[in-house]
Image (cartoon, rainbow, N blue to C red; front, top):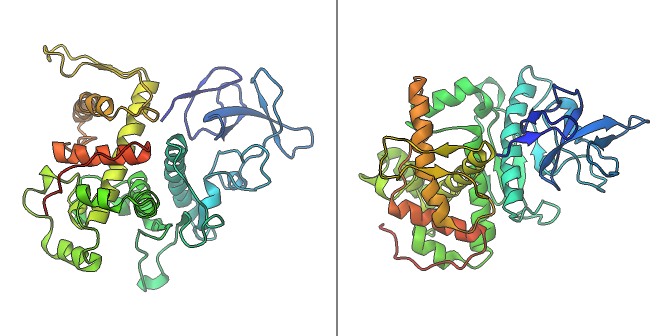
Length: 364
């Protein structure tokens, strides 16, 4: 994630900021420039004029969901939509008459907006349901049914991504993380994983890349329901850490792809954050220079996967050490083995429309 600055006064800003605490201007995220704009109300109060831009700019409008304090994005310039680029994909939102649901929705939207930020920077296709009624992207954020009569399941079905509202409750999500024996469970991780299923449809199935993907992740035609049942009854196979980024990735090739896709987004966005903060790692104890890195590249735009992969370990080792100094668990509890790295390379090649390199079939 980038670090931003106020166009009016130069104050440092963060992605979710809605107002500059230094000069007081309203803020709106502009998808066209991937920047936060400082805004002043128009004379009639019906829109906003960007300030501090140096040139005359047209009147802009905030997403209608700004009134619920869940969105700080601007409607695309010239659009007559009431919703921004991120919120127009919403289909089911929480019942806002229920106490606490607006705050849970805010947590979901912050994660979803970070996801959409990444997808836009990667220039990935994002067809809406209007563009593709049968497979366009759409988000549902339902609550569980009352009186314990039914729990919503987080998942994906032909472009329809459902994130259970209870996942936005930190205590409930942590409880599920511990019960399921997961190292990592976050809202942003859910979004990145589920959109991985969507892009399997778009970039693999619909693009004619099933054979290439099968060579990397295994045979996706095996029965999914049976694979899921086997996973929950028996757990992951012994030694899964050598070839899979998570235990859940062992369930089925579709889940392996989605977990690896999510991991790729973790990597590029975290590396962009390191670049934005001017981070450098140069521990004196590592006399061979193996952990020395300066983060000064375009993580989202680079087609050099090897460079991204080389930069990643020094950063994660450093942040894990910082977390331990605060008595916290490792921020990055994963190990990227060569087989996992090859899966990440495949995702990178898909994302950047690079030739898909043939690899040996994965172990079954």
